Structure formats: structure tokens, C-alpha cells
Length: 313
Image 1 (cartoon, rainbow, N blue to C red):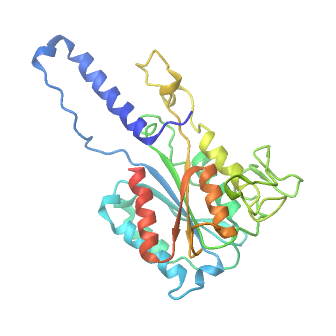
Image 2 (image 1 turned 90 degrees about the vertical axis):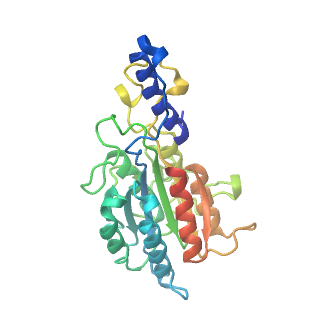
Image 3 (image 1 turned 180 degrees about the horizontal axis):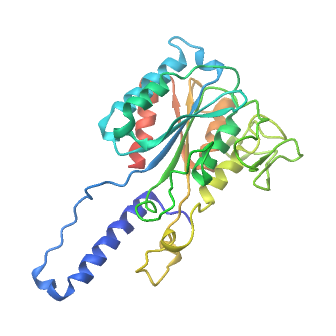
């Protein structure tokens, strides 16, 4: 069902070439076709979801300072100029997940993005599930008054890949919030549910999610990942097929889904036996079709961010 980013690029180039060749078929003997990069590269959508909990104030240097340093490095790198980035942060408060910066091209919003990241303030708990649900909600239908980065018009948008980069340094907890995300998450219902699907209470694959169970700190995280990966957020018309495509081969269908990568900060050795925190982060990435990256310092964190962005381009 899901269309890899490379396939989206290939289809976009193929459509351009097909149109050009068809238009010039009468003069085919006199025309040489050159494949060149587009003047305006496709801007992938990348949503950073950053831990703002109290434990980010631990360590020497403090984890939050290392996060700010790494994000500043990535945002200052002009190779990332054409990333359409948004930033969320999460901790326990009346609105546990907040918008740090709206979606925008890094090259246009670099200064305000860096300033916003440098205003992150560690506080209280780690409502990871609400943060994940909020990130998916922003892509699906908008979040707290801000529209979805997918846009309303498929032209120029259908080929953009969508990513969530979820960072945490601690165990998921404070899983009791359901505001700001519609009716997507239902807790304290035995079982908990995400979009009507019962959330697993016992997961063993890949070591599983050690925080499952009704109203547990990580309950429904896997289901959020599965839904984001397997759901086509935009359907109909050119969201599905180019107008000139009359074959409608299911293998070539355009799909607007989300890939979730996770970054575990200061979680120790990533080799087995992994800590419960790492098992949770690996599980979320696995269910969201992405990868898990351990990071013990600012340099490793910058490298993890950059590897993800390189994939997105």
C-alpha cells in the first residue's frame, strides 16, 4: 500500500517525461531529452516532536542544552533548506503537546525556528502517547488551529513524503490526556482504544512495548504507529492517480502516509538487553515503519537528525 519516497520521485519524473515525449513525438528525431533536477525540489514534510520533560534538565551537559545545540546545527545546515519542518514539544500541562513552530521551509524560517527551540523549558512528566497522537493529528486534520502540512490541493503535494521524528529521554508516563486530538484516543475504558481499535496489553515481538496495559504510560503507542503508516490521509482525484493515468495500477497508487522515526537520548547502550525505555522507542519506530536512533550527546543527536533528513530529501 505504501509508496516509498524514491518511488514517488520516480513517478513524478516519469510523469514529466511522459508528457514531454508525448508532446514532442512528431519531432522525436530532432529532440534530445535530458533528465535534470527540478528547479524547485520537492520539500518533504518533517515534524520534530521534542521531549520537554523535567529529566531533560539532567546530565552534564544538560540533555536539553545538547538538544538545543543539535537542533541548531541541523537548522543552520543549508543542505536542509528545502525541508518543510514543524516542531512540537511535550510535557505535562493543561495542553500537554504544544506547537513550538508552525510548518515552514527551513530556509525561510531558520531564525525563528532556532529561537523557538532555544526557548524549550524542561518541566514535569513525559506524555509520549499524547505527543505521538498530536503529531499524527496535525498531519491528518490540523492541530490547535494550524492546518495540515499536506495542503488541500494535490498539485505539488502528492509526492511529498511525511515524517515524524519523535525524541525522548525517558519512560512514557502521564498517559491520561485526550484533549486537542479529536476523539482519536480513548483511555480508562478497558481496553484503551485508538480510533476504535483496542490497544494491545501484551506485546512480545522485538521485545515488545513494556509500557502496554490499560492507561499505562505507553498504551496505544504501537497502534498510533500502525495507523500512521497504513492510513492514506488524502484520497480521491489526483491524490490517487495522475489525470493522464488511465491504467490505475494499484502498485502505482499515490499514498499519503506517515513514517515515524524515534531517537532515544541518553538511554545507554543500545545493544541487547535493551532497557525498557529503548524497547519502547524501538517498538514505536517499528510500528511506524521507521528506525530507532540512540544518541548519547549533541554530536550523536545531530548525526541522527541529519540521517533522517537525508532520507527525507
